[in-house]
Length: 519
Image (cartoon, rainbow, N blue to C red):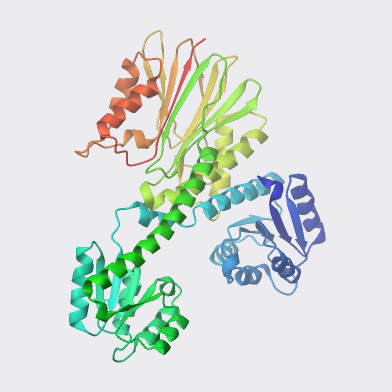
């Protein structure tokens, strides 16, 4: 990922700047150097970097002022920005976040922690870009009535047109003057605004000027509904950003048909955006939930992952090779359900996955508990995401010795089924959710898998799935199914039973992992 990423390093201490630059280049990044904000602005005029590392105390303009100026420009509002500074009081950190910085690293810093934060922030930024149009997706995947605002002082025309549009499945609001129309538009956020030109107090052109002064409202398609047909008025309207004219004399049915055609055109454009985003979602999904599990000698591993309405959410599943005979399995869920949280959940899942890979591969001792402790601290110290919590299970599996190590953070229990006794063992973790407190301790649980022993992990999307009466599938049903099944594939049994129970209507991400030792 990093090979083409450009990082702008701003520090007036040449020794610190060179140290950071050397190590960034060593790890595959391209680096732009600046000894202060002046040179940094020169770099920004020529190229937009992927991330900025900035000191606070510098000659002339300080880092806080630089960050504020950068964030004031629309094209840099989402540019990943990290302060690296010896000023590390709580007040400094609060000010950094309030100015729009994504993170804060205190000097002297540990190089591995700096690299971890950079990689994680770049991953988060990559996902934010792909899903930046969350609002568009939410609106278009829901059952949605197009919204129209009619602004006209003629009560008769307004009422007739509103009735006709409502019969054609539009949601309609009306106003008798420009000022009421503006206030309703702010609250209603219509898909289309129809406005008369000749109105008392403020005419249609003045109304359009009011809307153009608002960043959100000026983007709403605007159509004049008028009896004025003079060429000068029509040309003036287009200068004001009016999309079209509809003549009142055409009749209610023709006006309604015209409005429907305009709205359909708008919806087609939005649908195109959604299709492009869903395509991006599908390509990134494979990075957050592995497409297939690895083939390990002596083991059968199966996974089932189903997203909510086809858009990736907070569940994540990954397999990381630690050595020639050992893998670590990452299984987790970001707190939050459905559309209200999926945007942050998905971004956070990518962040977690990237961070775990970095921590796990740099650890000499392959202990899930030690990895969780480092990961928890990194998340807690991340100013932007420290209040987003995730459950996580980490399992190392040595397919030569058949030894399993497990540690968890706020997760559902790991289930172990012993083949010789058919006993079910619930392995539960006392570890808190990631990022809840700074110094969180985790413990490893050692498990020896005998021939035909099985492991099962589920996210709460399985446990909390509901039927049409509102009853949850529940943990008890999972235990009974797991204990009694005789099939070669338990996940096939679980999937069939769950979809039957919910009548194919899952209301959250659903992920399950099943492992069986077969030789």
